[in-house]
Amino acid sequence: MGAGSWGTALGKVLADAGHDVRLWARRSELADEINATHRNSVYLSDVDLPASIVATGVAEEALQGAELVLLAVPSQSLRANLTPWADLIEPNSSVVSLAKGIEVGTLMRMSQVVTQVLGTDPSRVAVLTGPNLASEIAAGQPAATVIGCTDSTRAVALQRAFSTRYFRPYTNSDVVGCEVGGACKNVIALSCGMAAGVGLGENTIATIITRVWPRSPGWDWRSVPATPPWRGWPASEIWWPPVPRRIRGTGLSVCGWATARHCKRRATPPAVGSPRELPHVSPSWRWRRAMTSRCRSPRLFMAFVIAD
Image 1 (cartoon, helix red, strand yellow):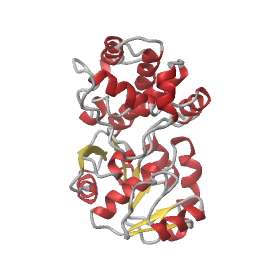
Image 2: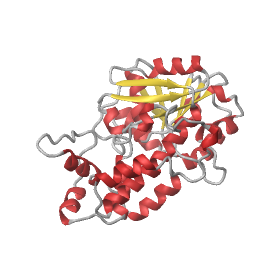
Image 3: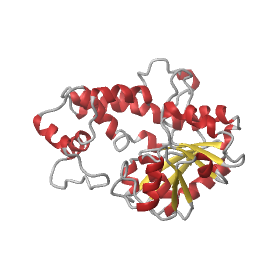
Image 4: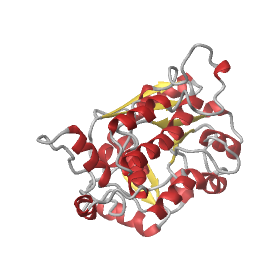
């Protein structure tokens, strides 16, 4: 449910895994375009979508008889979108949340929002999270993700449903850890981008990453005796560099790291899914180029913090 970049990319993954996919788009004209051209020109313009993906602008058509429902809408609009869909979702279907974040006002995780709105057992709800960039996954580049679900049988079934030659899901029963890790790493990524934006180097960024958890205020170490908080979390949420590239770019934009050289590069960002490898330059330069190509404006930064 959702034809943005992430929803479309995972729809392609499921189609490549041999499933029939119905993709709900908020705008009917986008659904018509996907059906006619097998492309999503708004979000993944360079990716050819399988013929087994059928788009629709009608939620009833998308949800009718669905065994697996993916919720690919932004975290702060999840409740508003899900409420009218609640009676349309099949009672035995698996529901997977793709959004990272905490709901403003209630401070609920996304799986909690889904459970509350649907009035269902938490074991029916799963979350998918990891170091995933939609454009690279849609291009077929190898990637891994974590499926968090308290029902191990359902988690394994979802793992098999998403498995392709380029997309490898892992399972984890710690849904809270998966969701909190996914939300908190965005905050860490913003801090890293801001550090780079004021001209600090990778030593500073490494310090932020390694010290952020022990220094987090309000962390109750008594609840996890002698165990670092990340030890039981999925490895894909701890390995940070691929995950927060766009968010680090946001931090860079806010802090005004915009020399003429970087602004020129940022004005003509690479096409979605295009290779970013620069074999003859240093890793540091590759890292900075990847970030500056994804910079956002300060206004969008504020919206992003509120939304995610």
